[in-house]
Image (cartoon, one colour):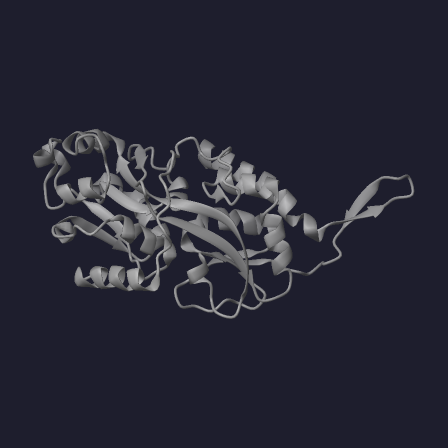
Amino acid sequence: MSGWRAALVAAVVGGVVLLVGFFVAPNPEPNGTTSTSLPEAGVEVRLVCAPALEAVCQTLATGFGGTASELRAGSTSPEDAVVIAPLTDVPAGLTVGSVIGRTPVVIAVWSERSGVLSRHCGGKIDAACLAGAYGQTWAELGGDDSWGEFKIGLADPNAGAGELAAWQAVGTDLANLPVSLRVKSRNDADLVSQLGLFGPARMDVVISTEVSLAAQLENVQDQGRLELFYPDPGPWVEFVAAWSGGSGEKVQQSLLTPEAQAALAAAGLRPASGETAGLPAELGTPGQALPAIDDQTRSTLLVAWAALGA
């Protein structure tokens, strides 16, 4: 386990000690001290999380003494599970609670290549910059000929709200995108996993949610270093807790405590309160949030994706 990952686990575990506090009730002892008991013994917390939250969800589940699994598009939630996902991805029939965290969409570029790309684009890496690089080689962009062609990775926007928001951030200038779109992954967690495994050999740039990339920023050191660029304005994604019964509401209340919010921040999920303390140092300053994607925009975006032959 890398030092960074160990530190992340320690930070999150430190927070989830308080997350499980609602299971523990103080019992007064004769000498005035208190002990703890588990009045709800046998209750298992089952978390079902959006793919972007894969890294933190497993740790949260461990802290709760429960299990975690990935929420898949169109799936139903297991009975008594607590779903943590964007509102539009929550299965029907669940009680929806408060927003527990938010994340912006970012453009991630390998640092060795970001300087070249920035110079080519006049100092700003955004959707227009990427559109101008589609279909070109790095030599044509002013970089090393050995880097080959300019390559971008994206996740299928049909997978969920986070992936759709990343696709929105690509913009509307898609004329040469098919030439450069080398990776079309099933979701954002799979996208950043491939980024970590294969590095710039497969992708020079990815557009994804900040929280999904946060888990990889230090783990890709063998491949190089990633720099994050924030569209301004850009898409944001909010995550809510939802449940069908059992201890769901108590889990949500625990996720909103300051200690739990700090633990989520350590994993790269921006707290619902807007507090930025405790976020990984590699994360930057986001731009202003675009309006939420409405049904018409969603339809337009998915039609544009389908037109790529994805």
